[in-house]
Every structure is written in structure tokens, then in C-alpha cells.
Length: 243
Ligand SMILES: [Zn+2]
Image 1 (cartoon, protein in one colour):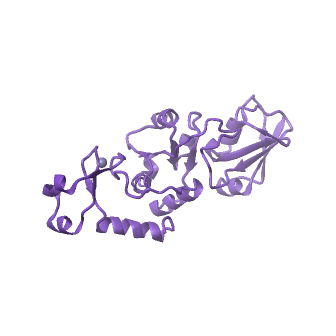
Image 2: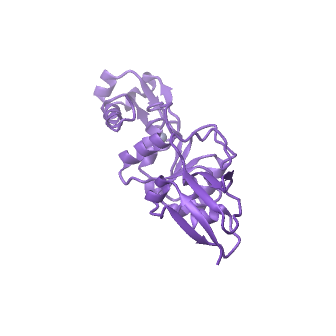
Image 3: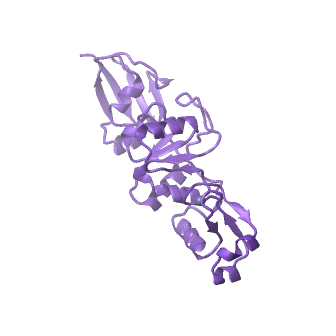
């Protein structure tokens, strides 16, 4: 039997519980993407593939006896600069969140990031949407992230939403935070609204103490920097996300 030697860096080997190197039996012609993914590592987690000392892309077909080094992505991961593995870069950071990490959606929207979430979307639809609208897929499902149409994604490691958010912020180096600029429920960008126009919808105390309001053009919910807002901000501070 002919073999290929796969080496994974520490980050990948530890998380995906792989040996420092893997002997892969080469019994059919397969791309390096398929071979890596057969070890449980979605292509979205791979930062570089080096074969016999030369960088290669996902379509490379390795030969018997070759040594393949698979490196993880080093954060902060800049999706706006094209590289050998991902020649189509994304100029804007936008997300689509899988149902298994759904609580990330309102949190990322709170930070101002365009984040699509619909619990009825299947894997195929998520992959298609990610490709067509240039969205980064966030999921806890390895099988979803192996789909070829998905270019950028992240396998979410943590179970708790606050930790998941910190994970995404750190991994993608999210900086240009625009807090409370987006509807948490439906992802629309909020618009400023004149207080007089919505006076009839405000509680007496809100009417008395607040002057700046914004409205969602989708669901018409009204937002203002009230106690809910402050609570969210302190939650972010505690998570080390905003100063
Ligand atoms: Zn809304």
C-alpha cells in the first residue's frame, strides 16, 4: 500500500485529536482538501498547506510518499486579503450563523455586524447564501463547514454564547465596532428617528429621560440607550470585547 504522510500543527492536532502525523493510505486519487477533511478537519480551519516544502491549494492531488504539512489559521484572520487557499477575498465582514450557534446572531448584531440567521435554513442553503452574499459561516457542525461552496468559516469551539462571541471577535480580529446600529431581532440597520414621531409608543419614563431614538425599518422596534443597552455594554466589557 502507498502512503502519504500528513503533519498537522499543534493547534489542529490538539483540537481535532490527531496524532502529530498521520499515515494516509493512498488508494484513490483525491484532492488534498478531501484528504484533510477525511481526518475531521474542515477546510475552513486550514491556513496553509505545504507539500514537500511548497505551498499548495486545496485542489492539489498528492502523490505517494509525499509529506504534507497542514497549518491552522493564525488569528487575527484577515478575510479581506486573498491568499493561495482563498483567492476570492471578502471586502466586508458579514456572517451567517448556523442554528447550533444561533445565540451568536443577536450578539454580533449588537456589535454592528451584518449577521444572517434563520433557524429554518438547511446546510445546502447556508452554503449557497455564504457563497452568493460573501458571508462567513459560523457553526459547530464540521460537516457543514466541509462544504466546498463555503470559503470562510469558523468551527465554533465554545458552548456558551459569551465565550463564542469572544472566540469570533478574537479569531477575526473584529475591531470596527459600531454598537447598537443594527436590529438584534432582524438584522436591519437601524435609522435615527425623531422623538416626536414615536412619542405615543414610549413609556412615560422613557419619554422623560431619553432623547435619542432609533427604529428598525423591518420590525419597527424602537431602540434607545436605556438600561438594557447599559447592561449589554457591561456584558461586553466583562467579556473583554469593548473598553
Ligand atoms: Zn427589526
